Image (tube, rainbow over all chains, first blue to last red; front, side, top):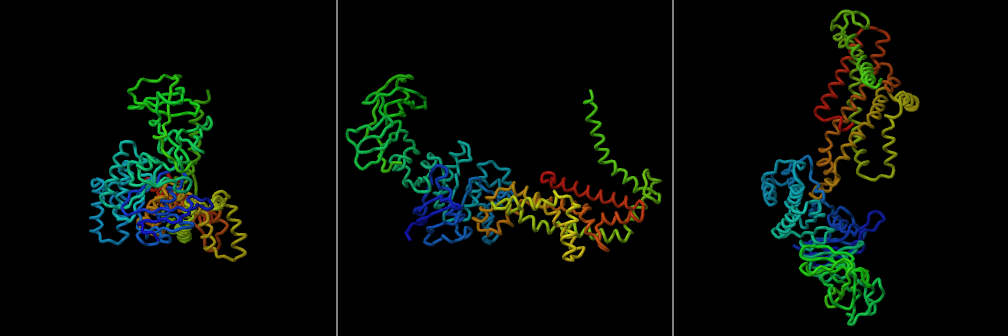
Length: 340
Length: 259
């Protein structure tokens, strides 16, 4: 057993005969804030349900805090889960919802009251204690769900798409709230999301998943600047991604030799901002342009295929149909260890 | 144009045929005369009081109450878990189960009654009361399953998982967070089942026997011998009881939401 706080080893998960996650290894330290990031169907939610004990693994082991919990029932795992739909109990008011687990533990009424009070205070819902879930806004319901899990003092708190049901303003607020609660309590937190911006902003470490496996694990900076594969690069906003074979860039217009090809690299990727406009060996025709505040984005038809570039909004505008020179500087490209 | 007066006339006729007999029965039961007649001869409550003194009515009323309450309770004990399984799990035969469960409403009661008599009661020598009880439970079951299913479908299933993750056992989760949220549906199913059983005639007709009759069957038998207005009085009382129950259910539970 590894010495990680939460350790998934060789985990294979399936719904019936459909394998959702294959041979997954993941080690998480105590107090980390982890994002499971990936498109729908990548196995991130399935992995989360397995950690919670709602899905029994087909193979592999899960250990938490030095104990093998693979066969431990969900209600004995000390793992909390905030559902995407919040899953509040409609027949109970806010206080009773938060008190639900504490009462089941058989705690004395006074302690239940104190801990529920503290839980509601920490999410700013003290004056809503007597309301029913149906009388709360989405954001408030989520806070109740968060408090309901947090008062149990779980070893791991799981959150399923915690921000996806909120509007943009609430999302920022809730993001800060989650970070604050996590830092204040030191709870190990794992949240599932398909939104890369959310993962980058919130997590200490990001686990990018694809097709039931881990594609890359790293800090937000690592993921953002050094994607390991074409998929991750594309997912975090590298719009121009090419395979590299025998020192040649594999483009829709054919192989393109590079002057100084980097060694041991399967592909190169450029963000729109890394494409040098106005000079360079290549030429492209402006097919589309859009204003994005501080920058202006260009879509170029080129012999290398469609290139997405970006220029400072203060610079002169290139008109549609105009031909401009550009370069893909190797020094500014992300090196992809894997392609495909 | 015919279309202007046609709808209101049709509406009037429909209402007249629906409510008319009921009004006639009420009027007949208030008669002071010796035989069932409309218009009533004079006004009195003597037949209403007479109802409570007829011994066979007391016995059959007890049988009907027993069947309505007991049958409904058993139907719920069977129907609530069945509805739960149908709504929460993808079962291989769930459509078949749903069909079998609702067949007693679809098949005419007279056929159900005859079939039960011919293939259950006679070959297996089952007693009259157990046979009636079995038949009524089977007749109520479809209502129980449909009404409880409706309220289960309105309930998210992830609240059970939430309860489990907060330390509850799966069984505990059912009783702690599912049952309280479908209480209204269960009560509605109980009332619907009760009324259905109490007013049941065709099936009970085949299964009633010497000494054991449901109230409606007993009323038929009584009328064949004694043609006095007490049957009308009893019918009026029963109608008011049914209306009262349904009215209260609608008022406090919103019965129409479930049916």
